[in-house]
Image (tube, rainbow, N blue to C red):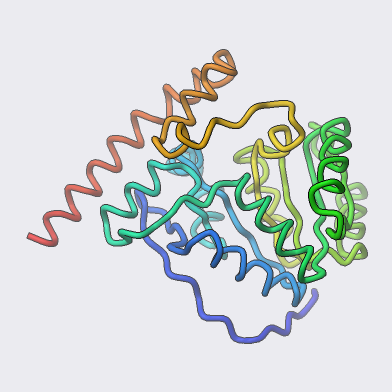
Length: 262
């Protein structure tokens, strides 16, 4: 197993959201920390968390374990941000997957850090590559690879590990959907010398296949509704099973927090 040699980096501050640790840093500070790890080729995990992920983790012990041991858990959904603001981090901002991707590509271009793009579909990766080369001409793309929906054989998995490690990628963006990508990252930490970041459905949005909600909609915390209108059949079941439980659990947390201060 590869032994890491890293400079001392203070553990980032966290805030509990319905029982799971979420990193209490700004977008810029998230990016700076990831780039620092990437320069050292450290094996790290960053989960981009929203309501669906946290509620899923309440009944999925494997996902819960990964979230609790992750090096970063960014507050993607605005409900997470609001909960953090109301329970001790008043200046917390959203750290969404798309904003993280864009900021990382910009900073990685300056710092000569290469990025590997893993997951999604071949056609989406090709569209992404075209846009990346236009918007970030100095970005080092270490590789782009789609994965099959079926489980990989041991030989296939070993080959993926080898390709990422030999590419020199300091960052690997993983787009397999939740919880598949988180479970994959958990299995590959310490096997891949790269910061593994699960970005969910960001690749199709960046490729132009799906539209991102306007900024005003995102700021209001209504991006979920915008996405539901775009993909009602796929998302209705998920939202109906995750939003009510989150509201209940967050309300309990806020009530407990108020009692502590009274």
